[in-house]
Image 1: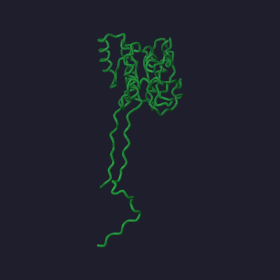
Image 2 (image 1 turned 180 degrees about the vertical axis):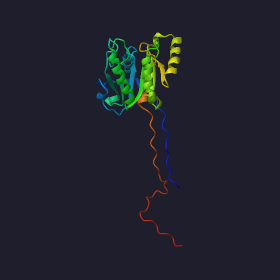
Image 3 (image 1 turned 30 degrees about the horizontal axis):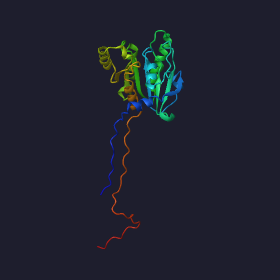
Image 4 (image 1 turned 135 degrees about the vertical axis):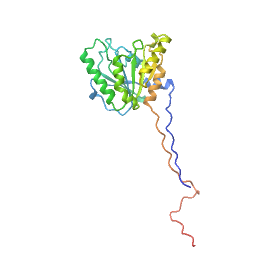
Length: 250
């Protein structure tokens, strides 16, 4: 009888309960801040970047998801925060993923030179960051995707097509009627280039559990199960003899 081995199919991605996902998000803690890309540490854990216009509610979204009031800095002057901030995630201080808070873009009060510089920094980050696993783009649905959002979509499209996770969050959705919300979802889904689109409200906690579960899945992708080792079928309870038995006379 020939030995056989069983190879298992990759396990389906596990969906954690909201309690597990929110508990994981709550472990977020400040890791480092960087004024330029070359100051970022090289990491081998999944990294999820949050990006969007300066008034799209990015800091509020991060603080709501992590259940921490001041983890992400929300400047009173939108667009003034111009550092890349990293937050580590993982229980017992063991980092298994990182959230990246990219500077907001497009605010009118920021000098044009600063706008252009940070647009280039973010573009380089989104194109070259090797451990980048997913991008969350925040958008005020009352404004829709702006020209700068469209530019960002063009930048990341090749990576999204290659498998990078992408989510558009329509923030401040509590300010929309049901009809307006459905219309905004339909429009942005057509523009998102294959990314997911969800409604989000920090005030009403709409979409919070769902987004936390999705980010947990991004950071903990299913891995193929280990192949079972080939095992010779047992023929007796005795160990095999070291010396082979002599051949019978013909």
